[in-house]
Image (tube, helix red, strand yellow):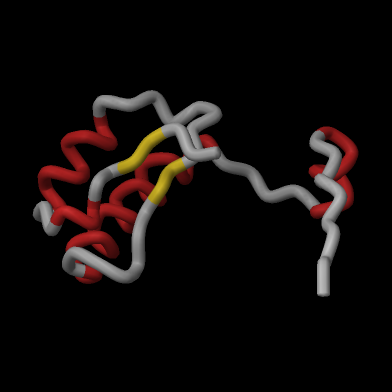
Length: 79
């Protein structure tokens, strides 16, 4: 599940969302953003800020390597 919701659905400006994001440590965080309410342009600004702020702490790894450290859940489909 998510650990941080920026409440972008409420229509708050990007500056307020960024202010809340800046207070939270990004290590291990799962962010919840919405795409159907609020102002998408403001959400995009907050997401851009977040990505730039965590970029120095990110590294790319192959999916197979990630799966070794974090087993993927079993997916089931019901028809």
